[in-house]
Image (cartoon, rainbow, N blue to C red; front, side, top):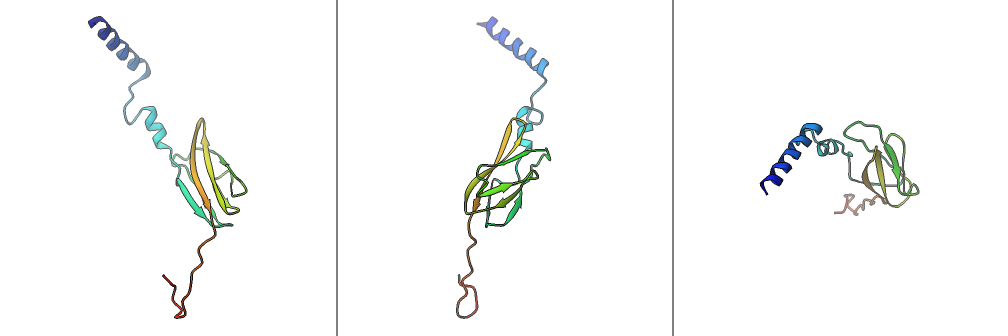
Length: 119
């Protein structure tokens, strides 16, 4: 039992020496955490636009799951086309970052007889 524990400990030490130390600030999880999309969800009316950004400034391939609802250009600018819902993805290497897009008509303000907006 002691030999197995010692062998395991030796393997861990050798592995960490070969691959480097993985701390909260330098490990693969820290790299993934460093890349974020500016919004996870946006709501637009038809014809409106919103530009999504990646926190890392990395170049992304932008894709919409339904271009009839919302299109997205190569710079991350989402254009609301028609009422509905879709998802816009920013693809960087093998990672995809998503933003839910809701396209709906804007609520119209109701004006009361006194000329003030109704609650």
